[in-house]
Length: 227
Image (cartoon, rainbow, N blue to C red; front, side, top):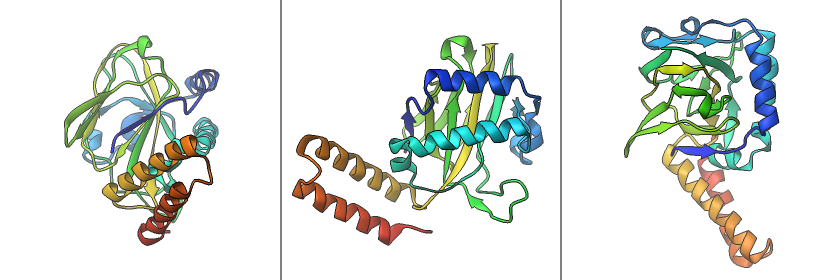
């Protein structure tokens, strides 16, 4: 499932975050690349242990916690601390697959990367190129969203960022370990939850069919969830 979620951050929020992180010191993005991705990676990143990344990442996490659509789609168990990257003239990230297991900093906890997410922090008119291209069962999907919007997709997907030819692309990116490991099951739960929400809008919270579907939804989570 590839899902675009608008307005994770309001316009004033993402612009303030953009200005805040751009004023920080950046490093070569290959510093955090693995043996394979480092060969095709040309960008810059905020140092993951720096104050700027920590403060901005906390704001991203707060915004995710307010997004019912994100929670419905991801059913998050753990979220790695958000990171930040930027691409300017001819910078890019070639085709790669994200590592399956990551460890945040010096933490002893290892996190399985079920979902990848990119939160755009630039206006699409401010740069050319820089599309996030994700290989799916239906072919390659190119994503270039308004600032404050997020794309969520399976971390197992082959993906790349095309070269920026004008301006600069800024984004936050992170990974999610879901309570539901299997992507197909997670998609079923998302579709069911969204159907319940639409029915509640039409019929009211105490509608018996909605209550029955909600019961099914939560029983499926009880059966499939890992905690």
